Image 1 (cartoon, one colour):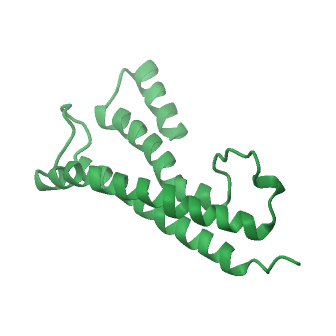
Image 2: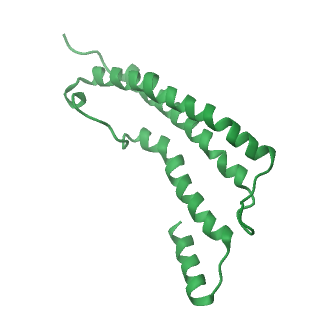
Image 3: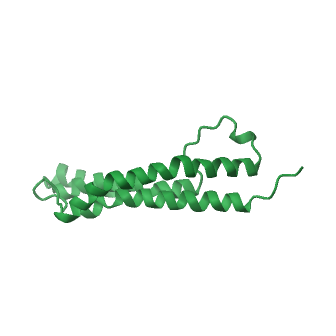
Length: 142
């Protein structure tokens, strides 16, 4: 993405060349970095966590909190994202949507597919991580 931006600037500034598809590709690459990295970020526990009591909890209690968070917050959010983006993405596929700009990206429908894909990947990662943590934590000592 940085290299593409660098090339766009050099071509514009020094060669008076520019293509709309190159500029649009930077915007879509930026969006894909955030959307496709969401599940990876959750896997590595680099996501934002509001931590008031969590650090003082035992590993078993943390696993329970994570499991509840996934089932009551993450999964409903992911389901909502898939549900609300479904018509948007399917219509884009139906018309083989391209950029509104002349010379823009010709496969916009493929890029829009990343929206529900992100929610699905995030839901799967949340489920697998929280269930694995829950079942792999040893019992608390009495």
